Image (tube, rainbow, N blue to C red; front, side, top):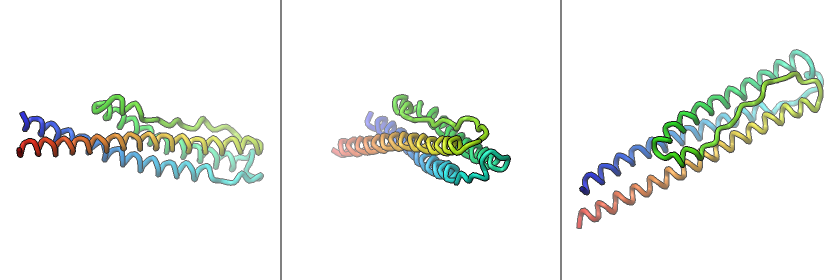
Length: 161
């Protein structure tokens, strides 16, 4: 009876450790992608680049790079979410999925240029929201790990008596 309980706890501990490792990896990947999107939004809106082919190409490229980074985050979060559903559905629902930047359109004036850059910055904030959600899930998993270790220690003490 006690051995079975210990074996179940050890299996649960290994499973939670795997999820903790995955959550840390995803958190680090989200931070890296956030920096990439932040670099995409940090550019000057020079007057000579507004409304011409070169400026449109540069902005479309920045839009594409931001969407590519967000797409990677979405894939990782969705995979982690589906795996986490096996452990705890309530915990899996705490994950936040960032959305991609809307399709790029031509920039003709200064206001449109500012709006484009602010969209990219808002996506950086959106990504940081998902990073915080992963961090919360990670804290819950670490708490679960400590609880399991405590239960194992108590069972071993009881067994020794």
